[in-house]
Length: 589
Image 1: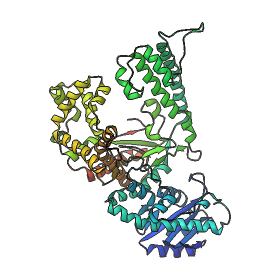
Image 2: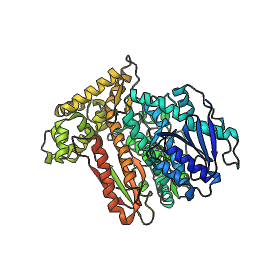
Image 3: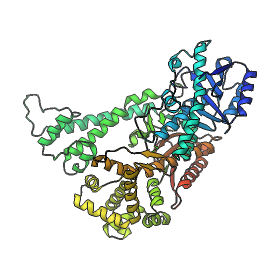
Image 4: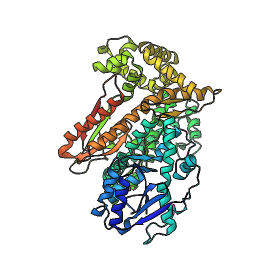
């Protein structure tokens, strides 16, 4: 389809564009930049499609100091307003550039990338770049050859300008088809939830988080020393009974070689499972010190590999902070994921987390939902045991332990409570007797009996889990509280794949609803904190880390708690939603 564009280079023309666009219900929006990192490059073009075939291309090179230039105020007002709806593909990218380089925030977003991901419902063979989405929804090939051209040239070529204009116009046509499918699949509510979360995540990435380089380097040296000691101790334990065959001491093995480790452990009489994965070895750790030492070594090795000196390379030289990339829909459940680097999975050890700290004069507010997945489970199932425990403020894990071990709640030991806690959280993931046995070291028969008592205690919970598993097999899908859809593929002749679908059928509504709540909380907090010194700097599934000026930390903490509770209470009705928080100098609770 032919697209006509107007190149906008003057304040008068820009004002006319904004006035025309403000009268519309929907506009297409796109940007062209000289880099992928907004802190490294320049924002060159802003394209506004007033129809699928008519696009205004604003050349920011013709406007001095765009972030401070009052001539762009009309653009900032247009973008911030909830109407017209702004249709973008991968809106987070454009939102970051517009915020940093123009000082503009986007309201009323429709993101065709997120829409495509929502409709894919967890199917991993779908691709979501603009070219593929264009072909999927309107059946046209989109030429992206100019994408890597020189966008910093003094004068852009007609082919560059036409390319830029087409990207802004095509999303309007995609949106029309996408809305039809979203309505047909009852996914409008979750689409709105996701679109509302784009700007908060863009701000989160722009804000970044401060990592103390010196602290990190010092703790890394300590960890490496510990690694050498643990590796030496493990080599000594594994060499027992080996043929020395040399005058030069013990036989060394490659600690990262599955084959060599298996041979050494078998020689020592360790009854190895089919593989030497972490969770399969854990039950053996209490009876075999060499397995416990191996798990310790692996834990340290993983931390060094994933979170070693390489993480320092991600510190931005302009800001002195790490600006990670958060993938908004990182899993079929709707959970976010993170990379470059993955600051969601920084080891929990104090030696690591204390290096992430608030700068001078600032504080962290570290807030998380208390047992949110179990509260969602209580709300879904209406089980009296769960509901009554949460409504009365009783310790659910202690209550469960008392039922399982036939003792009074006050007589429950810490080990019994810990066991009950594992079961309570395990049922969310479809835990079975074999897994309980592996995690706790009790026999399979004992695990089966405890699970029988557990589900006899929480009968409505048991019924809901059975129904969720059955529904996953019958309908090959599950939904979260917002209506998010996850489809399951499995071979009906393959019991293992059916079992996985059953587990996902139980887990998806719970974990996915938790993700829904967190995203709603991010939007609420984004709006509440807009005119304060505070900003969200990290999110980890049910935890939100906010950074703020020290003098208003208490007031901000109250806002954060209320905002998170309000988000939870939009979805969870039968039990209270609880948020726990601390004010700290470092990322420690």
